[in-house]
Structures are given as structure tokens and as C-alpha cells.
Amino acid sequence: MFEKAGFVPSRIYRPQGDFALMQCSVPCTPDAVFPAKPYYDKMIPSIDKATQMLDESVLPRCPRCGALLSLNARGDDTFLHTPHLQHQLRLIDWVQQCIDQHKRLVVLEFGVGLRSTPVVVRFPVESMVRQCGKEHGHLVRVNLTESAIPPDLAGVPSPRGMCDFVAALSRACATATADDMAAAEREVAQQRSHLKPGDGQCLCLCSCGNHLEHFDWRNLLEMLR
Image (tube, rainbow, N blue to C red; front, side, top):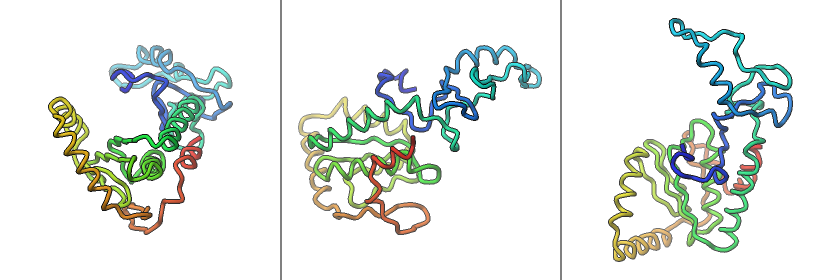
């Protein structure tokens, strides 16, 4: 989806995996990851149109050990992060540069909830924004039901659908005047002046009261490998 939208593939990090790849289900080696398209091309013509069943003889198997292949999707300890490592390292370097050089960082987060795996995206981006500081870090969280932002972060919670948000953002960018931009800057500055310092309280559904400040985004990303 991101590639079709024009993003450069080398700048896309997929921490949850890539459906364009298949991997050994064992896995037999850390790099047993293969393009999925040749396997799809072989399987699709073999699907029985009446039963929607697939003959076992065409099930994709690892060319190295013969085990069944599975989608490269994070689900358990068999997931192979290897094809995504270099993209992750580029992301880490870029975010660190933003922090070190005091550049502005705006994170647009779409549809990342708390019920599944918040340690993959939600908590790391909160930590990134937090380390940029209230003058430079900003989080825009678009989520129909879980758009809350920790009270120590500058941000915009948007409880709306992704398509509606993007359409509204596009219209605003196309029509915004210099006065509009200046007013937005003043509003952001005012919001940041009211932030609560040092409060990284967890906003999880269980209201556990845990604090996440000690969960550095670098450590969270390293855990994904």
C-alpha cells in the first residue's frame, strides 16, 4: 500500500511483517525468507473453484529444508525479522538525528490500538516524541476508540476514521493561509506550555497505573528482532 502511494521501499519499515514475503515455518535459518508471488502464482490456478480447496501437492515449501512456508507475519517466536532489520536501523538512525539535532518530529499514527501489540508501534512512538521534548515532538493519534495521548506529550487525539482524517488534512493543507499557519503555531505553543512534565503514565485499558518512561523506544525496537 505504501509503495503504491509513492513511498520509497527502502524507507518503509514493516515491524509486523510483509505479506509479499513467505518464510520457513520452522524456521530453518534466520534468512529463510522468500518472495511470495511465485508461490501465489502456482497455487491460485490449483484452487478448486467449487470447494475453494487447494491440493496439498502445491502447498509452498521451504526450498532449504522442505518445511511448509508461512506468511512473513509477526505472530509468535517463529517470525523472521531479518528482512526488516536494515529498515529498522535506518529508522533508528533517522529518529536519533532528529533528537540530537533538535529537529521537529511529527508522528502520524493511524489505527494503532491497545488490545493487540502496542509495544510494536504505539509505545515506541510515544517514547520517540517524548525524547524529542515538548518543543520539538508532536503526536497525531488517529483512532476511532483509543485516541488518548499521554498528558506529558504534545499532540492531537483524533477519534475519527483514517480516510476522513486524511481527506480533512489534505483540504486544510490545500487552503491554509499564512495567517492560518501562524495561528496553528500559537495554538501548539499554548498546548505545550500546559503539558504535565515527567508523567509517562500508561493509558492501557486495564488502568494498571504502570509508567512507561523507562521503556526507551530503542529498547522496544530491539525487542522486535
